[in-house]
Image (cartoon, rainbow, N blue to C red; front, side, top):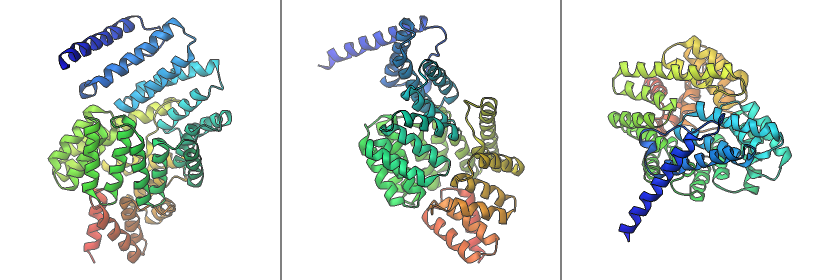
Length: 443
């Protein structure tokens, strides 16, 4: 039977390629076209099918420019392609162009408003995303999807009680992978790591193996085990994700972190560089800074640190130049500048992010840590108190909180937090752990 299957597959492949070439030549003017995937992301049948689907939608729009359903589907496809490739600058702008075209003719289009809200959240325009999601909710208050957007926006703005209400509503209306994942995230925020693991496991089981959303959830499940000190389980989920979705960058990064935790730095460096080659995500470059330093390669570490700053600064400039679209990266920039020892720049960007969302616990942690590094310990403690108000058990947060407490005259409480963090997952942030271990050893 196989000898008949392969010619059929070749014929299907040939027709798909021919369709791509035909539609590309005749793409409608003014409509954004898909970019070719490169390297390992182009391997396998997913890209052939995805590209053919996108080109098919473009062909429909060429025939009927008023086909808003195809325009919406193309925008959604571009948003997903941006997620898969990391090429958010191109695909987010392309999707936004398509969505704006829909909303010009139909300002109350529910799907377009939801997509625009999702794009705003992706770009870290959280207040804008919340407003759009609330507008969509008014049009269709029975949509589970819109409550997911409202959950995300409220989390990022630090309105956690409201986020819980929105997540509960989503699970009543639409209990699926995306709903369970949001429950998991909220449980983690509130310090319930076992509950977070349970919910993320439900998310994985609710998905289809190999799809990006499912494998993202599987990697998130692995990360929950990683931050709670269970490396073998974490590694198992990262490896499973790579089996289900070969060359998945975020699973490669997870495998790299496990290797670094076991002091196998060459393997960690290899996998992080593979992830970097697949997806444009500054996080991989940032993680390489720490691993190169641990592997006694200071020149490479400094190079990666400068590259992280350049990537993030460029994104921040684009966001400042375009209020509607562009990725706000000030929180990430604050940490990146700490790694280049530019404390003034780190404080500047931490304050910019704080001005946008002063109630978010992660933003408060960032500002607290920057001020700790600057020797401004009383100020650091003010922000750290806010950062800990949900009782998160993240070991890095606890270690940072403990270090700050020791500097303001509360050594017993500080040491207890540091000991808890080091005992749970000493590998999560080498710099923070090293400071904590040095302080504990000084007793």
